[in-house]
Structure formats: structure tokens, C-alpha cells
Image (cartoon, one colour):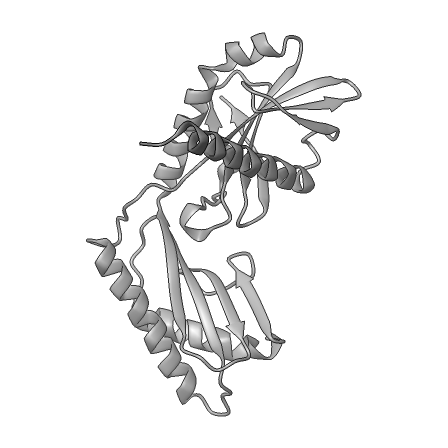
Length: 250
């Protein structure tokens, strides 16, 4: 059984994570008003601005378990291990190679099936082309034109086995549905937020975490999606890509 003290600690940690997400989103997006941030309840925060109070409700968007591309998590894990192993072998066969240690995280939107040898070759070639930038470590993410199927590639100027970590497998429909569900759930609580902060503008901030396993990207074409909501503004912040997009009202 979870004690009251543990529940209180969990709530405190959650509030700290939410505050970091709000502060990070504000650094990227000038639309989010400046001013001192105060912790609040229903909504989570209030920002004192020159033109008045802005209430901000913060909610996390999490990837759902499961993948359309693999029959099981074990099959997915095996595929990733083979890709990394083949890439390391391919790299070591290249002329003039120097030892490096590589860590990768996988990223697959829309459940696409990839050819492991094609992925391995593209990874080996990418590492060969960028290893000189490892002084001693260089990290690339999906905004750096890395090969398809990868979310993060880290190259270290040390000797060690290549390693593959977590992955995200999502479809565009899943992302759309998850955002719609988050908005709908929070929209039902909007009357309470307005009651607690009368005359304030109430915003909704949806964020996804920086860890690969908790991250949801802002997909291409997101600016064309619309959702019904009554918040004054709604923002989606993807921490891993450090991207912010305004949610359009239906």
C-alpha cells in the first residue's frame, strides 16, 4: 500500500516535472507569456503578466504500448540488436576506420517495417561520416538528418561495443487520437479552472517527455489538425525535439 508520504512525494515530483516542461516550452515559444510562474491547483500554474493572470493546465502525452511493425516486444528487441550488430560489422570493414563506441535509439512513426541490412548500412555510413565530430562525444537526433528509423545516434571516441536502446513506434492516427483524448479530458475540467481563476485566461499545455520511451513527436502536417476545445489557447510541446506547436481549434 502507498503511504500518504509517498503520495505527497509523487505529487511533488510530478509538479516539478510539469514546471520544467512549462519553462522549457516558454523558452522555445514566445507565445507563452512571460512573468513569474506560481504553483497552483486546477489549473496547475498561474503566470502573472502585465495584462493579468494566465492559468496554465499541464498534461503529459505518453506513447501507447505496442507496435504495428512487430509481433511482440521480443521480436522488436531482436530486430534492433541485429541492426546494431550488423552496423558495427559493416563499419569495421570500411577502410581507415578508427574504433568508436556508438549508442542509438530507434524511432518508427506509422509502424513501418524496415530492412535491417539497409538500416545497418546507413548507420555505419553515418558513423563513418561523422566520427571526426566526436570530441569526445557527439549526439545527433532526428532533426539532424539522421538515417530513417533512428531517433538518436551518439558517437563516442572510445572503444566499446555498439549498443541500441529504447524505441518509439507510433502511427499518425495514434498521435491524433491521444491528443484528442487528452484535450477532451482536460476540457471537461475547464469550468473548475475558470471558477478558481475568475477573469483569467486559461491555457492548456500538452507536453511529451525527453526520454525516447516517453516521447511523442510533433508530426508533419500537425498545423492542419484541429481539435474541439474551450481553452483560450492550447500548446503542444515535444521535449525531445524541443519543438512547440499551437493546437488549432476545430
